Length: 434
Image (cartoon, rainbow, N blue to C red; front, side):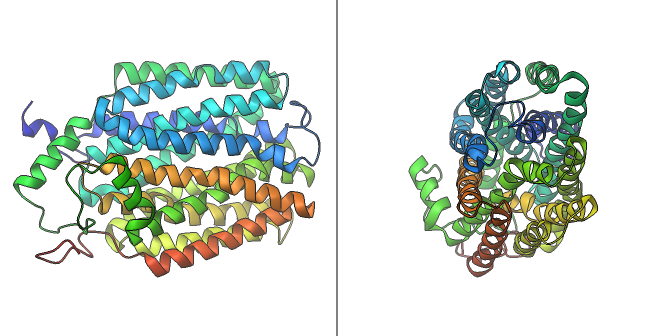
């Protein structure tokens, strides 16, 4: 294949971009089917004792830990065997999940199924993101990340609502079995038949940068080889580069919100008298606002930069979480969920875009994988924190305050240590990387 075969751009690769958007929506369906019915019916259907906040959050801890590790593995693995193979393996791992939920004699089976869900999400969602970054231009990163997360989280929200209705019609177990098997089998077929491997685009971009460096040189980390080891990339993302550290810690803490919405928000709403379908719509509001707004917020960052959308997003999202326990009623909870969702939309695609801005294409997949490792470890750390907060006080409201305060503090760290990463708005100085 010639260099012209690896032209980058959303329009130039619209068919593959569309296939990957379908893929990430199906990934969203897979996680969404676990986000309304399972926590809301944890006591009545799966035998969890009332008030067991730590046990209720245990399946999110399991999910976050496994997904974080698989993100780390997926990034490095995809640079060796290609993006498509990693994605296919992720869907194979998801095959037993609907059957395990259907059969589950107790809560331990739900935790085990969630471990496999973490494998699926870590491999598949990572690859939809990396693949689209491979085949699009630098000035389209915010837009493509917005499209990716829009599609994925509209899938999450839609599945949460659909499975609530299906569970009421067919029963929780049968409904999740039918929905889950349809999603996984369709995704496997589409991956096998229509998805292309985009690793050659990343290699072509690396070669092109060497031959003719771009006019606006990104602010890549200094003193790093063209092909750093896994340990070197991990150190850069985790502590050596203050900008990448700031992004990684923000990614970790923002997952506290998603852990809360997944693990405790449905149970909190049910305990306040909301029906299962009302829970689906209130939680769905968070997902729909998050997903839909990213069509705007991702593109916005291509024009105004990543820094302020990320910082303000952390604070607005934290404010939405605090609002939940400051009022009552379906309308109030829906508005609060929408505020949190909008804040998440500001930060979510743009933290990833910021990582892509300042990491070279040769090891961008690894960098994104390690960022996603820290980000999704936030599921586990956040779930433990909010579970402890609720257990020690005996009140679910404490978990909301724990998450809200964490978001405000993390946003302040990002404001202090971060910087604008968009290469057009803040390019490297001539004669040096930084």
